[in-house]
Image (tube, rainbow, N blue to C red; front, side):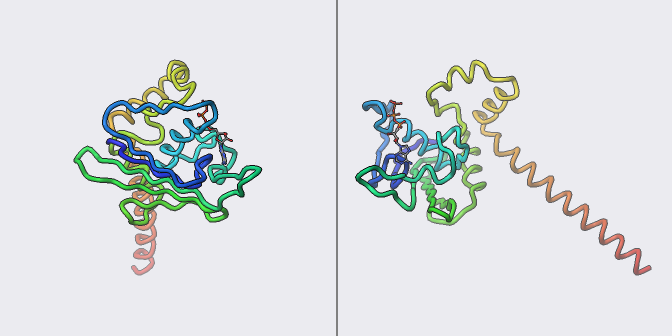
Length: 193
Ligand code: ATP
């Protein structure tokens, strides 16, 4: 998957709508300390479905919304739109928006979807909020110190099979529900004999 464009509005320090075109090849982001370089990487993780406060350097979900400064009032929402091209060359537009007091909403190519659907879109393309392709500060040391189970998760993500775990869990839940229904049906039928 190739990320082509990122649009941010009200996300962390990006109070004004900002658009970043990412051309093929190597892209470097340079700027003084605290100008928002890491916030950009976090915006990519966030639109991919990340909720972990540690990954987003935030206390609560709404901390990603521009919090205001001495001269600017806070914003009521944050929105990130990611444009990408998937492995088959199809265009993909993923939007995540959070409003104060209303939680997050996701859209894929203009259609409302669940957070889980967004996670699966990226997991199937062997990427996602936890992809080793997104290297934040301190990440290298973390990879070196990772436990075997954590390394396995990284390999599964790189192989594009991480989404299978979610689907397996869903299938197991459905199976359990169906077994419970069958048991209830048998009880009812025994009552009819
Ligand atoms: P460094 O080079 O030091 O790692 P950086 O360029 O990666 O810095 P970031 O860490 O991305 O910078 O940005 C930090 C800035 O973002 C800080 O000025 C912080 O106040 C601002 N910031 C973070 N969250 C919010 C928010 N919710 N509202 C407003 N500003 C925010």
